[in-house]
Image (cartoon, rainbow, N blue to C red; front, side, top):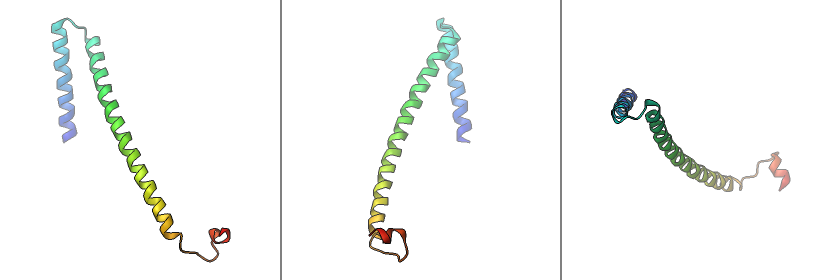
Length: 86
């Protein structure tokens, strides 16, 4: 439902920009290129934010995994490969 509304808004905005560009004497290709560049900029910023979030989550997960390894490292299982290395 929300994606349909969003798509209609984007389409309506694009049509409005096209009409304004035609009134101003800007060709449809120039207008479409400008709109595409702005959208790519927004997508790039969103992707950068997602990358930062994923890096923070990965770092946190790595820390949790290290803590888990330390917690279970006190147990020695007979016959385990790690037991022979200690």
